[in-house]
Length: 293
Image (cartoon, rainbow, N blue to C red):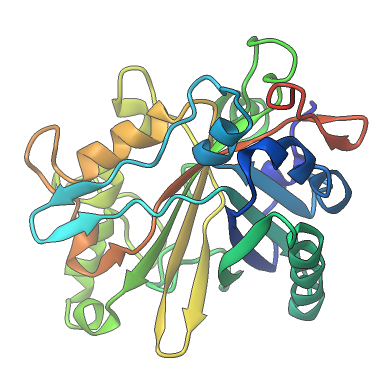
């Protein structure tokens, strides 16, 4: 496959997420991409293009659009779209720090770093709520089919779309729940990760059951916990071959489909949201042929 291989690789021990705004004149947009060919290997450093950058390149990527803001009862789903999104993967936080500095320096003429977030593996891939994240992830060929664009032609095949949201947990609210209530919120028992057969319709696993949508909405989740000062939560990262798979799921979570809101909102909220296109690879470099003139 000619995809950025880290997308389907195992969740790393550590991660650093970077977002950049595009600060140059649009006439220089093509030249601004040149440094990406040197700093992105697709395995340890993954990049995604936001719709504003693609527009600055006077190009189009079918299916790419801005993240939609939404409103639910007592909460907002924000859209915080940027030009570039990076996912740095590795085993050493210090190495990721220096790699981020290298990327920032390489892009400094045309891009400005806006946000930096560090993620990490918690126990056996658990969210800080204690529940295992990504249990229903497709694997092997099914993962490729869910996360990688195929049959669309050169420059598009091998690409992925990614939906990114930073969620902040309220652990006091979570701790105030009895264990049964926590399990009902997620739809799984924390003790053995088994799905509850009698979970309420508001349970997260019922709201987001990938096979319950038409068409089925499978995705490859690569989310990781984060901690900054006294705040903490989950950086939700989901790779798909079409953003429709994620968006229809988010709409059901906020109750747009049937008025039932995902119980997840009882203790956590998103504070960011972005859609990005992750280009394919060719000969070990990013294949930007579809967006470069």
